[in-house]
Amino acid sequence: MTDQGPGRDDKTPRTARGERTRRGLLAAAAQEFGEKGFHEGSISGITRRAGCALGSFYTYFDSKDDIFRALVADMSGQVRDYVSPRIAQARDGIDAERIGLLSFLEFARSHKELYRIIDESEFVDAAAYRAHYENTAARMATRLARAAERGDVRPDVEEVHAWAIMGMNVFLGLRYGVWDDSRPAEEIAAIANALIEKGIGRPQ
Image (tube, rainbow, N blue to C red):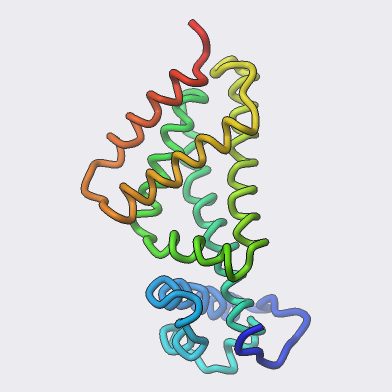
């Protein structure tokens, strides 16, 4: 582990103020690692950005590795919490994938540090990296299965389709969310959704 501090088994915040401090540290870590990367980022940089003492850091995290691992899980959760309520408003299963990509593009454009942090996690914490994508694909597979039950998409959709759509979304987010966000997100989502509809849409 890196920058190990005094450990404590239960680091769950016990008060609302404690939760705010922990959230502030995670937000500061996103800035620190997003700008500098994991290896160049530091605990002192995180606490300086968060405006808190070093001791406060060790109240909630054991090390730089620990907060990075928590950050990957937190950012994955933020994507889920941003996208899921919007998908719930979809007209049908195909429209749900359009809204899913559109929402992801919006999130990526306002959290451009997401890609650097997730990509680095493959080498810093492979389990967290894998969990991020496996959990995302599992949600998509469940969504597609429900769409198939309703007759919105082909009845033979499966996990492979979920991973294929997720892979497309990941690279569209990189190209049109992080590298260049000048093209309307609605346009990107519509073009990609046409591919999905032709690929897994309900047979006419």
